Length: 214
Image (cartoon, rainbow, N blue to C red; front, side, top):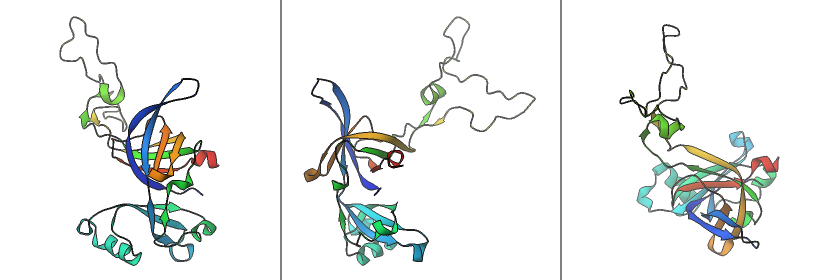
């Protein structure tokens, strides 16, 4: 079953393997999540489970979402996401049910999605890794420019997708095939090898690797 679990990124640290190798890891807080609603093929055209995570005050939720939580007899939650499942898998869930980190174990491969850190409006050197102009004699006020953008008499325009200055970061990023280094169900903690997108305390979504499952 490939279920999209919700959580937060707590930060990075390092662990030592038995041979002394140092591995950078990211510590994640995953769940517990609650089943708010279900989508069925007969009613909605597909099968899915809607999971919610993290309690919030009742006055901070939308009226439409508030009704969903009351129907499921749950306290208001901050985040909700939908996970596609099969008909057989859908029957295993009940509205109001708690879903924990037990779905994952050490050695699993997971895909993790999050929103990358927003860096605001940046130039071409920071955004695209361009080298900039030569800092030699005769170069003035052009050290960090992007250079020619190719708009001559023909085609008399700049092609879409041209690498130029603009907003950098703050977009959804998914890293695939990260290895789970450890799982601690008593604290809902997962430790994965490598980096995870987003700042500390940022929201993340974790699911088993779709490529490995295929």
